[in-house]
Image (cartoon, rainbow, N blue to C red; front, side):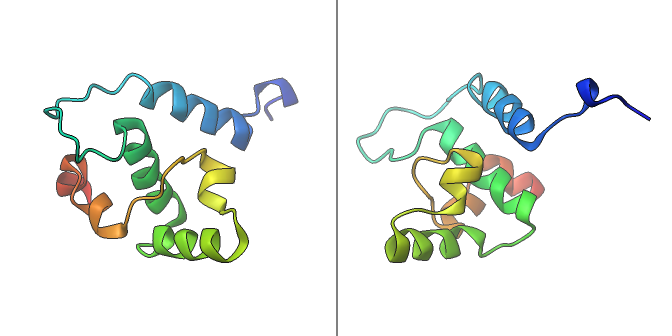
Length: 97
């Protein structure tokens, strides 16, 4: 059985995901229409997969409007919630979604 010092907590896991996503390259051409960073887009896609819910992000947007906060922000550090369709249109989602 692993010792407590070898356990990966959820916070440690999310911190590792952030450090990986911080280094994702952005091959998009600059446009004033770009609303989301690559890191934020990857976090949105990850949150959808992690929660196994294609409507997770729309539910989080509704929660944000109703309560002023959402689980995507609290759990994953997502700064701007993309729409489900925007997330599905990410190049990586064309391969995995």
